[in-house]
Image (cartoon, rainbow, N blue to C red):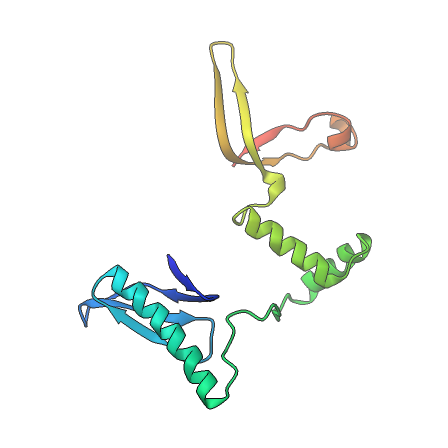
Length: 162
């Protein structure tokens, strides 16, 4: 889904089959703010006007306008995951908050794929030809003690393509 953005506010761009027009609403605020248009440029212009009108209205009535994101997020992890996060955060000598911020940042940066599973260039060689496969998600196989002991440090792991 594509989003419109203006003055830190985000809005949708959708089609309204019933009304035979384009429609949208401002996201991540408690107040209901909608806008319409016959064309995409008109929809975008009306989105901007809707945000400006909202901010002006709030100013007139002495209300603080809703901000789309406060920077505070309450999440429910469940007991086991909460425990694991707390233990890992302590082991890294960071707060639980900092650990979760880093994890979320890494997840978003890599579009939902953990960075340890993404290699920008993976080379597959055979006797006939050399071919390059880019951006494939792979997962390292764990080595057992009979395969060389401590895994990554003692020898290169086998990789399996998911």
